[in-house]
Image 1 (cartoon, rainbow, N blue to C red):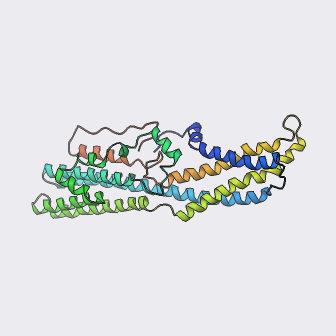
Image 2 (image 1 turned 60 degrees about the horizontal axis):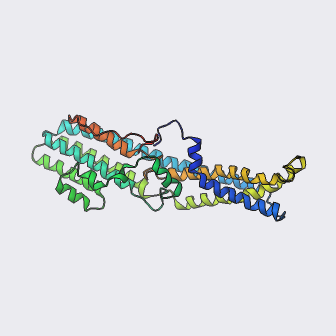
Amino acid sequence: MHLGKTYRVSEFIVWTRRQIYLLLGVGAIPVILYQVLGLRWLTIPLTVVGLLGTATSFIVGFKNVQTYNRTADAQQIWTSILNSSRFWGICIQGFVLRPDDARQMMERHIAWLTCLRYELRKPMPWESMEKASNAEYTHSYRIPERETSVDEELCKYLNEAELRQILKVSNQATQVLWLQSRALKRMLDNDGISLTSYIELNKILKDLIEQQGRAERIKNFPYPRQYAIINTIFVWAFCVLLPFGLLKEFDLLNQGITGFMQGSMVWLVIPFSATISWMYTSLEQVGESTENPFEGSANDVPITHMARTIERELREIIGESDLPAIYQPVNQIIL
């Protein structure tokens, strides 16, 4: 998540520069064919290109709205996790009679958050983090899940037997919640909590499972591929045809021009078509980088920061003063 007022224009241009290079090449080819080789029939009515541009605008806008909604849903899910975690901590401290049991329940909850965030950071085939522009930009900020393994993190919160049990299963977050449920039953049997408290704490576990499932839905089910491909096809069809539609329009400008540009106005098709097309490709690139809000891009939901916030608050509830440090933003970006 970017914490600054806005991205710098220079940052955005560097991020999209590969598209700019390609668009300049796409604009140069028809100009060379028209102006240098004399293929004057290589023109398209600008009205046709304008109609395609209008249709493309609707498609790009639709995708950006949907991808923004995915990010907004992800933010809402983790806000719910934050609130449920606070309630869990308060209930554990108030309901559990033995301090050691309460501490272990808190530690397991932090382990659950750790398992969940590592699961959500796993790369998926449809995500865009491996694209050159995104991979290059990751050097500008920290992705903590890429700096340490989940094993190293979990050993801070689980005993050796629980750690072995967690690491051998595929869905580690669910396994941690199962350990929590088993611990609650054990405390009930040993008079560590009352029956009413047992029922209430299991309701919170159920809510945590639901939030985990909602997060996994966003992670494991991408923006529909049929919409993604039609968006790309429309954008690039417009970008390729646009310079052909501008050739005659810029050629007509020669009639009212004198000086060194007289007869050469067609060459301006290259920068102008590239600029117009860049607006469309940039919107498409922004939408693509927004559709997967857990992959680790600069605009993702800051789940690592939120997990650390929850950990600090839970430790404060049980009276600890030696708290883990809050993650600090790097270049105004925090995950």
